[in-house]
Structures are given as C-alpha cells and as structure tokens.
Image (tube, rainbow, N blue to C red; front, side):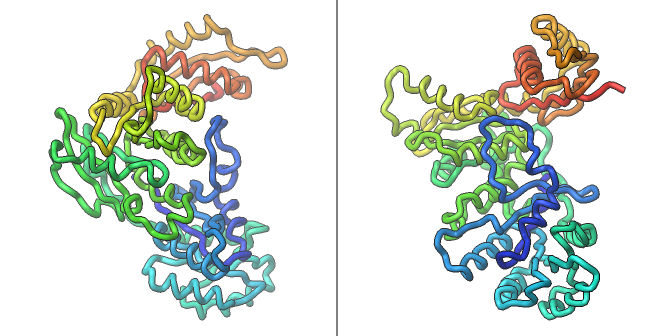
Length: 436
C-alpha cells in the first residue's frame, strides 16, 4: 500500500533540511551501492515507531529565477498538493515574519492536517518565546532543535496521529497492477490511451480507491490488469513543469501500489540523466520493471539499430540489467502486443518462490565454481540460504561474518540464482546474515 507523505514547509533558513536529515537519519546517505542510480535529495523514506512514510524537503526546490516570495509560494503549493500531513516550520530566533503568515494563509485553505514546529529552541529559556506562534492558528507549537535533535519525538508522535487509515487492496492477487512512469513528454499518456484503446475490454473506472489515483481495469487474453495512473501524471501545472523533480513525487504513489512498473524512454531524445533517476525510484522500491522505448517509429533504422539502442540502455541502466526491453510506438499503436508477455513474466517472477533444497544446491555449485573470497586470511563461509519474501524475491544467506561478503561476491551469487531460476524482470535481494 502507499506510504503516507509528510512535507516540511516554511520560509528559507528556518532549518527544514536539517530536520529532514535528522528524521530520515542515516537512510539517505547510506543507500545500497547501486551503480548508476542518480538521487535527488528531495524526498526520502522515514520511519517512526511502526509507521513508514515518505518525507518531502520542499527546501530542495529551486524554481528557476522566480523571486523570493514566489519560491516560497511554489514550495508550499507542491507540499499541499502532495502531502497527507504538513510540518509547518518556523524559527524562534527570528520570530514571526510576513513570509510565515503568507505560508499560514495557504495552509489554512488546504484543509490538510498541519503540525507547527518551532525550530532552533536550543535551550529551556527559549521555550517561553514560542507563545507568539499560537497566533498562526495551528494549535500547540512543538519546540524542536534541529542541531541538537531535541523535541523530534513529540513532533513525530503528533504527525503520525494524522496519517490516513490504510485502505484494503480492492484487487485480487491474480490482477497485475501496472504503473507507467517516465520524465515529462516521453509519451506516458499516449501509451495509457493506446493500451486502453477500443480493442481492450474496459471493465470499469474506479475513482478514488486511493487519494488522487485513477485506476482503470482491463483484460487482455484472459489476464486482468489494473492501470494505476496518478492524477498528477496527467495534471500539468506550471510548478510541476518548472521542477521536473516533482513529477517524480507524483509517480511515487503509483509505483508503491504497483506490481510491475513500465519505465518509458523517448527513442527520439535518447537516454538522459532524469530517466535514470525516475527508474531508480522503482528499482529502490523493489518493483518488477519493464523498460519501454517509445516513439520507435520516429527513429531511422538499419539492421543494427535495435541492438545499438539495447546496448546503450544496458550501459546507462546497469542497475536494471534484469529488466526486459520493449520497443514500441504508442502513437502509431505499433508493437504494443510485445509488452504483455514481458509484463506477465515480470509479474510472475516477482512472486516466484524457490525450494530451499534446490536453492542450496545452486549456491553450493556456485561456490564450487568460484570459491568464496578471503580477507586478511579469513575466508567467507556460506552455511545456508533461504528465501524469506516475494515481491521482490528476497534471500537470506547465513554466513560466518557479514563483513566478508563483498558486494561483488553478493552480485555473483545473485547472478547464479537468476540464471538457475530465471528471475527476468524482477530485482532479487540478497541479505547476508551472521549465523548465531
């Protein structure tokens, strides 16, 4: 299900980024070594008690050369659009400002839950200075200190109280939930329209199954699909166009609810950095992925064009070496049927379980062919491997010392498991664990 979204809003220099980094902790800086994934520090996953959520740092948005007030307004608008709960941050040292009041006015109209945080309350004497902020009308201000990490627990306790209730998944386990992502103008909407063309059976449009997502159910050759299209992927607002980073936030909710994600690339323009960033989000969420090269009709071809383009994709998206590649033209409705076998296979492999006995035979054979590495005279011993989860398939490898499992050897074992069981289309997670 989708994680709730929390946004931190406030004028510049109140300490939004410091709090963002505090809340998401080490998670942002220590991410798995995934070569080629480009990250924007605009959002990250956080957790408090048993709640997982996505946190947006609106301070990371630069809106071109817009004047100061316009910047603040744009940042607040994006947060209001995207967030389930808003942390409105002010700064005790500078007191109430006109900019604070402007943000407050916008937040009133949003009807979203707002928790007021007063930052830079670094000692007890300053606690008396927070009373001015009651005049903003958001109830009790929460005194916090980003630099010392004080008061964050109380603030987050209040934030999680406002999370929306989880909704049950309305679809059965055999329905494949699909989302289509990509940077602006790669042809996502035309692909959606082509897939849902007259020749498909559109069963129904269920609006509002989750906040601002439009789900369309359809069937093809006996398989049921639901296309999860976030309203935002259709909605072109001025702000979203000037801050391409934000089109990704829109896609996040759809990615979280999907089993299979179609990452769309524009064949005319070729691969750019932002394509990697968008794909990186789906990869990090552990979703099954198909790479879709759209507008293939516009490319001048010879007998080698497809191979060249495939090589370029493999080079650029090294972290997606498991994803199949489909070449299509949504506008001309060419080669669309090539997508379905890839989608079905990716979905099936995403849910695949393998027997422990067979799995351990494969791992033992792999170690025989390529013995485990040694470090400072100590050798990595692998005792046992077992699958602990699906979507994505996740394996725990019990070893004598986790430090001895280098990234390259972990990658080697993953490749051996892939070739033995055929996990095309899905990431595979391997987690080394020390045997007690």
